[in-house]
Length: 423
Image (tube, rainbow, N blue to C red):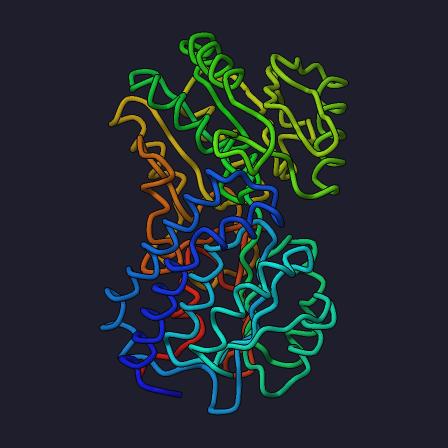
């Protein structure tokens, strides 16, 4: 593998090619993901910024050795909910000296082909694209002695089925999974800023991001005021054709997600929840939906929704909000808004360690990233570049065998560091 400076130069060439092909990439992404022209435009621009951000990582990367030997490669399985941002994951593994074999989601075959057309002239066989189905790809990677590590973006149920095989073959397995992120609003803060952040982070990509807030906890003293502003913002969204530059929210891509949303709404109503807005589903277009009087008995408060649906619950004290947020099988990200001092206290009690670490068993009740009076656009800035991200519970983990012992690690991580070794 070439040296770090030459690898970085290739990344610069990739960035220039993405910039040159920006409009074409946006068109492909809109067609295949169903995300809006606005969203895909933002994604490309953020990705260009992230690729530039790797310049700042050259010093720490230069002191590391790739996990792969000369003929080996890291297997990378990417999710369907993205296009341009996926380059960040690929490049982060490559820059520390690894060869990479990339598997896009099957429904992203056009994005994969377009991306490969950008990469092949620049990276040659250092980054290869694979079009096998997901099961075949992962099973081959696990059994292949030339693949020491597998990085998978997906669901925890899917990832969990490979535990025994990963252990048997002594592979390293880095998993990035779902979230069921709490959004806590305490009194005493900038209520309008909190409402706008909830709307922005909830409805971008029609809620189809792992860091979209899904459990909304409102202090009783601001519950009604907050809710009314949020409902008004939700009503004002322009829905429709993703290709229309003025459309603000498009359809949900996954038929499975549509089925889950329908089941969650039916369950919520049966358990005493009230649909304050929306509930209308036309094909794959889910109208912005807000469920109030939510409780943790509801499916929508326990399982990932992955759509533009918010479940809202009231609380009376900060301690109650903490208990509610911790009662979660996922632990990716949490947001806290309110009086700065009180919000920081709550955030400090929810955040995990600064970087992933060994745990005896799945750790619940803490989160990999905490944002306090801070929008996701800031708290997630540089994700997978220099900012470790990932979570606890079923939101993500690492399996690896060290000195004959099978280890479980959890917490925020960088794919670059997890696919390389300290020099």
